[in-house]
Image (cartoon, rainbow, N blue to C red; front, side, top):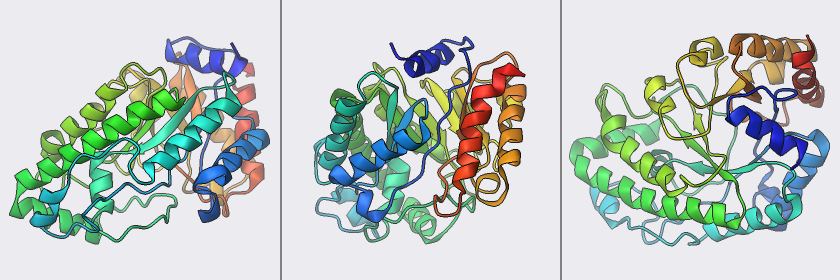
Length: 332
């Protein structure tokens, strides 16, 4: 078994490895979002930064079938489960299979899956492959559309989420069959639990859909939950059956120190993707890595950024500093 795989698996069972595993991720260019170009982009990234695990980016569009855009209850009721390889989902499965063949057992690999609510939210606009670092602002026209639909027919929204979750569950299972060690499930509750929607909307409608997806890959060995935005019920999300928990501990909270004694999954975070990586220097990145290790205390930790970052804005020296700081973190 490779040092990288051993390092990550040691953390997952609650023990300290030789040093904290470290990784980070960003969306590649439009020309690199699919096909062999996507495979090559990931492999070049691995060669350049030598990270300990790979988060496979997924900029393939979710198949919309006969519903080009969701604007009405009637649109919601047309949404049906689709095949795991429907539309562009087949392209992501191909990227995973080719990466698995190239990487082998060198390091663990989890692949991005956007949760059912995020997928439905995207569906309220025309298809787009534009991606970037997330905004911590929790509301825009997509949220207004979904709030209106919830008011008009809450059960229709539930049915749409269940159909999307069924597709994503089969897709996630197929990702693991294609060679991924698990999934990187991105969820966000501050889009959902609004005054208009009600404070328990996530628990009522979205959590069952999330769990359908996670149950489909319960046999996987490296499932990571990414809590995007400003979590409203961090403890409830942290109770999901995953191996690793990743969130923006610096820019959104809660802190690693808070989570250390309160959650079961392994912790992944420590570096601010929105401020420190793009706007500060290597010494600031190094300080955040060492502080993250101190906050984690006796718990082992995976050093990551809180979410994606803009590769055009982040100096490579800062990413090199993140790697070097993780490699020396236990030498203090």
